[in-house]
Image (tube, rainbow, N blue to C red; front, side):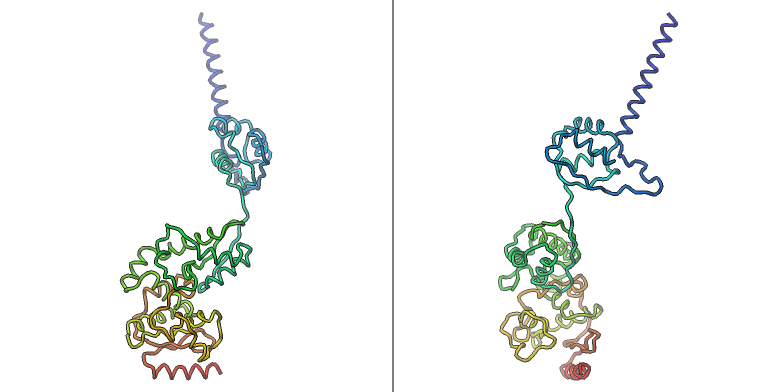
Length: 353
């Protein structure tokens, strides 16, 4: 009898050891194939894996094992079945890594998160909507005219500030497409690019920014317009708060409400000239701040973060005039009186010659 109990104990012990070994083995096989995956300092980069159309879970698992993405095809297939995903794996080209868990791999295959080539593009500060459209077209992302049309027709309730844009602007989203570096998938729709750029704008011009604009007595659209003037007039970053101060001071001064910004005339003309003629300064446009007082109907380009900050934080100075030094530095002479301004204009003329 004693011998019988001893044999039963041995059998139970062996059975438990086999079970523990099987559990350990399965648990190990469920781990990412790249577990402990830095031997010799070598990383496991993502690999492009092509899942053919109508591939069964068995074929997908075998392919992933062949590529070293998973440790064991059978365990992967059984795990997919256990999660109820073995019939949901989608074909396509994926980028997968041996360091990804089975859950992550199955999630990507279930959702069809196929790999797409990306395109990186940069929109410089001060670019107009037309220049943005041309830059995107040059990168092969959009048709120029279609992008401009999409800007005019764009609607998204998420961005409340779009409802305050007046109807007499040249381009509806002028100034709101934030200048920055972006990365998008090939084949992306124009509306998606617009949404991406508006999200970036909204992140910079957040609620605190809108409150600051209101404290100065301006709407977001108006302060954005000021920022666009600062961006186009200011080439030296440190001067932006000074240029902003000139515009703010003029707007508060009834006798100096003509902003007389050459940048607005260039925008009205639709071209950038080295120097403006007297005839240019008479161009018939609400954007011509030599003939029309106060702010133009809207921004004249997309201001960057520094110009936006300068618009709500003008320097504490009493300047009413500025003129380019014309010495190649991009800097300006600032003055309080017309007499001073005319003297600096004469100096600038000599610098030019």
